[in-house]
Length: 131
Image (tube, rainbow, N blue to C red):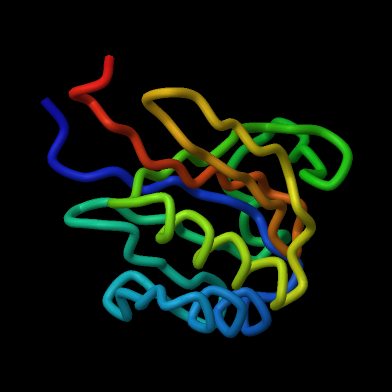
């Protein structure tokens, strides 16, 4: 149905966000990036566009949520294994993110963190055969 997804998230400092996510191993799509926004490649045709807050605010008339106090969404991303979950979340926390929840079920293992702007990222691995 959909060819691509761009999740837009407001950030206080685009350069700081770029450095944080690059440190976690994410690449950027420079075609869709500028001084006011950086586009993280999350997967094939999956992107998170981290947009400078004032530019983000100018795109719509509604008030922008402060992700550090109000959850506007949770970005959930699957990875291949528990080890990948731990590596990514531990790396985020070491780079300044705050830890979130851990969920350890028979078929799924996940952990979350809140990035430098308070956005929630849930990283999980799922064993579909166990469901």
